[in-house]
Amino acid sequence: MRVSFRLLQEAVAAASPANPTLARNAARRSTRMSSADAAAQPNMHTKYVVAEVPFTALPTDVHRALKEVGAVPKHFPLSSIVREPLGGPRRASLMTRYHLTAPDNEAGEHMYNVLMSRPLFAAGSARASAQPGRPAFGTNGLKNEARVVYTSRSAFGWVDNLIRNVSRNQAQDYQYAQQAAQSLGGLPDAKWALQPNMAGRRVLLRGLPRERPIELVRAFINDIGIDIERDGIKRLVSAPLGSRSALVVTCKTVADAYYLARRTNKAPYLPAVMGYEYMMRSHVV
Image 1 (cartoon, rainbow, N blue to C red):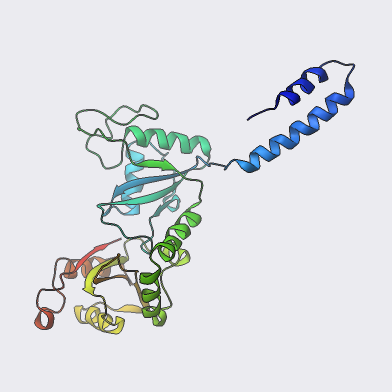
Image 2: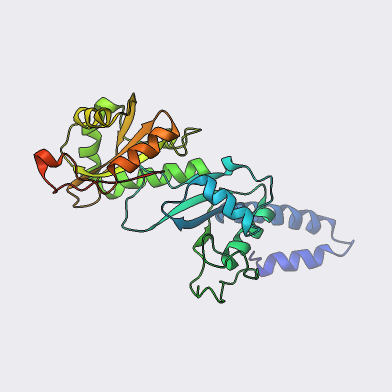
């Protein structure tokens, strides 16, 4: 905190019992300055941590891995782990991000330091020595810094901000997807992304024709033998310059979700009609 020279003078003078007025004035000005500085500087909550992990990792996988490397205690709740929303920006990457909420700032700093030394799902990370703030080096050959950062946003604020970034950065694609999704209750939002008990029940289905009506996709899924809810399909905003669509299918059970992923991953969409032009990719999220 920066303190002016005049304020220091008043503080020194106020130390003398003969200057009670100066003491009161210095105390009031110091309080006002502290409040102003606190308002001007962002409040970085070290209890909120964002870590990158492999794209196919489920929240239960991350939960178990955090305990294995000693980043969280045994009683750390699964509800404190939130995956990057499917309605957020799409990028060509084998990684995804998870928002982790620690009980307090001290626990958050411990989590950050451990993940910097023992990255999740890295070979030998559970055996690496924890050195606060330093990346892991060792026999596993991992020489890049662990992908972990602090964030000042709560889980809901983090998810909501990522989804809103799509409408700001891909305005044209967003408007097209929004019009196409009107009959489906709109595009994914933070409330939909954070619905409880959805881990393992949602399938990210990619590679279908961009103009394909949702009702035809629903009929295609029903032909596989899987019944979904009326609002069980959400259309995502296509990647920039993309000619394929991306959908999120919410199944009634975890078993149905894995069955759908097995039947559609690396399989052509309607090969009898469209040949092998549209190769699907799908996995459970």
